[in-house]
Image (cartoon, rainbow, N blue to C red; front, side, top):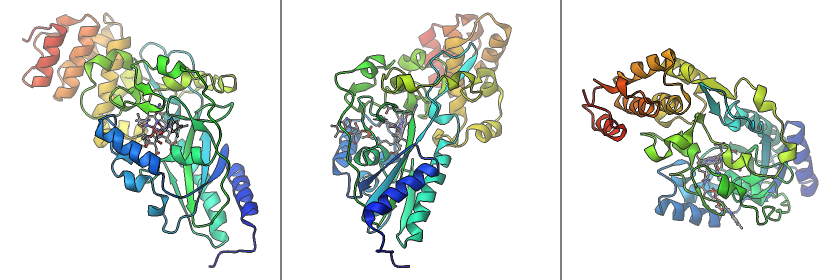
Length: 370
Ligand code: B12
């Protein structure tokens, strides 16, 4: 079907934003679909400097992830949408529990894509072509949101919405409709640097530049061992880290305490450690889990056990003993660390140290190799 050129394109843009809002989007804007050349060079620079910490995502092919024309040939515009997630709760999680970052407690991306599909449907019904992308490696979502005037680049690298903060997931409809773009916003961070000072590991190197090798959100997702120097800072986190958003003053008054009563905000360490692979993937499989291997969630749970457990409690001793005897050297090594941190060096006698990573952990905690 040929596009309906009788509708004025400004009116169409307004209609699309209204349709998006009615479909559940909390903010929207329109941007041109020309390549994000500055982001491309930034992705390449950070990759060269190792700041990506081995991540693939948008770093894998920056020429592709910064060019909407690769998603839809002849792309002219992006209709960008933001959907609110809960604001993380401000209180600490209880003993024996692990914290889940606000954006990961529910499938907000599915809701976002559904709303964007409604917008895409409106475009298609007018004869235009339209494709939805959200949290897909094909497009740099934050750059699209900034260009569409939804928010500004926060110092913590997140897109900050005026008066509301960064508790939003972002996505776009790529279309060949030449819509008039929205007006980008001015910077709203001013001289504030609470996120730089508040990041538990100093991962925000300078304005908007995250060193993923230090970022707890990435360390909790990345494969391999959690570097020892960051294990205490990981605290009781199972997935994601909200610290640089929690300390941000933008939208603080708009923040609810819904997280404190949300049953999906945290989970028992024991539940994670005792669950089968299948149970873990059933429950958390929509997350990015390296190699789709739930052992990395157990690895995080062992770190949380070491950070928050009571070394003298019989159930903690039981779990430590169970994982100190596990066949997987990654998990045995993290159990060694947890036992050491809880002062249970007595449990380390006889731990199988035939793999170097376990022997190294034992040496680091001063445990005896039996
Ligand atoms: C890789 C990735 C990560 C990585 C790396 C994050 C990073 N900062 O690079 C890890 C795993 C650490 C991560 C963590 C988080 N992420 Co993430 N992540 C992504 C992903 C897949 C790609 C991001 C990317 O391309 N980064 C590469 C770098 C180069 O881009 P950038 O950080 O945006 O850098 C720009 C700024 O520095 C900007 N800039 C900064 N200051 C200034 C000043 C001026 C004047 C200008 C012009 C530019 C500028 O220039 C850079 C280039 O554009 C996107 C989804 C997607 N497809 O886009 C989600 C995404 C960015 N993540 C998101 C979220 C929610 C998070 C977390 C909050 C989740 C959590 N609670 O744990 C944290 C926040 C950590 C943080 N402070 O960044 C949301 C962003 C929401 C928002 N409001 O901004 C996204 C968009 C997912 C989505 N679709 O909603 N994430």
